[in-house]
Image (cartoon, rainbow, N blue to C red; front, side):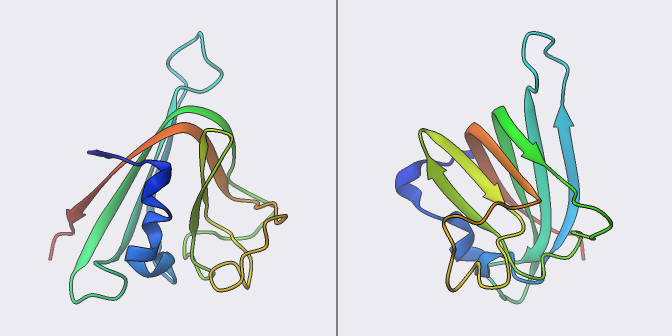
Length: 131
């Protein structure tokens, strides 16, 4: 896995901001009893390089999770119809899986997502999806 750094910017630009891609899995790890949350992993099923010819799994692993929210009522987030964004603030990284209707083209810095993970660090990798 490759560590994600603030100077890398929004990795998701490379994948078309995951617009209309699908959440394959989401896992939160609570095994370290000294931390409220140890880590989280999100796997997205999408197209390579944001609409490339092949399907891939984009795996994002978050370390030392500070906050997360995965639901808001009966809304389904399986398909990322508004795409997704990665941002950095105060030394933490946030994966926003609900950036709002204009979240990709015209992000609102005050928008509070109903589906996000904020952590101290993140690693990522791209894996080929089975044919």
